[in-house]
Length: 268
Image 1 (cartoon, rainbow, N blue to C red):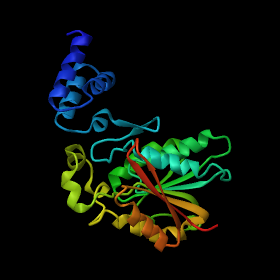
Image 2: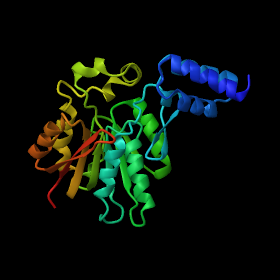
Image 3: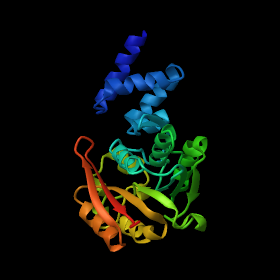
């Protein structure tokens, strides 16, 4: 079988399985495979429903290759808007801002923020990240090792060092916000292959947002910001949770990415 015939065969299998971008996926799988047998195994896993990123072992996010694998939440492109909002708010910050990524998953958001700041002339961030899921923190440690990120395993702020209190300049959160009753409506790739703890946001999807917002003032520096990704439907509830904690709130949206971020600022 020639390379073109091989690609055509992979495309046909992927398209039959319902992959919308079969041609693009085929090229990625062929490039990643270590020979015909490995390619066949990878295609089998993809056809069986495993997310493409889990098959490849990486996801592209903000121009970075982020390591992921089975059982770990795959960073979505819409979360790039969360990163942009976090960076924009640090444009006038002093060198060495402290960034905290709660519910970090594989560490993609914190990695993208810290990497972008490191590329700026005067912004080298100090990055901390936490997640409740041991599988997620294992990947986060791999992704953040090269930039010296500190990864902690535990529930929200609980595992963080006490010395971080009152010093965080930007707190980014991509916590689960799908209402429990709507988990069954999610695409099979997500609900069957990603951890429930990374998807289920409670009865109205805002349960974790409320917990994050309530404790945020104790961790933020004066003038620090809390940014939470959510949906346009839930944004008012997330905003209300921040306001109840004493933060000044605003809502940013991006129609192209179908992204919504609620931003809360602690008074200076």
